[in-house]
Image (cartoon, rainbow, N blue to C red; front, side):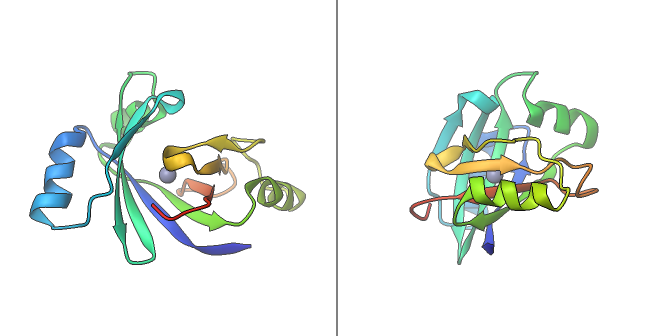
Length: 136
Ligand code: ZN
């Protein structure tokens, strides 16, 4: 069901500063930024081999990323696993008794269809299911 690690999501306080670090200092390839209004985040993507790094900055104190930063500070926020069909993956996981935050697929950055597994089912790790038609 899982194809690869699609991306690692990293919560940052300041996206512009973080982009300068990852693009200009570390020298990663930069695929641009996008605001995901529904999630109240600005994101920036850096493709690395078969996967990507996604930086996330909250645009609102009510953003899940703002809450994460308050509690834990900047750092790895989630692991996104690529699947062919998010709706099917949700059903398969639920059949195994896995709790989902998203019972239905929703739209993430770069037009991906995503769903998050409830962290009660995967202690200490937030896992996103991610389906996309084209690479970042
Ligand atoms: Zn993500």
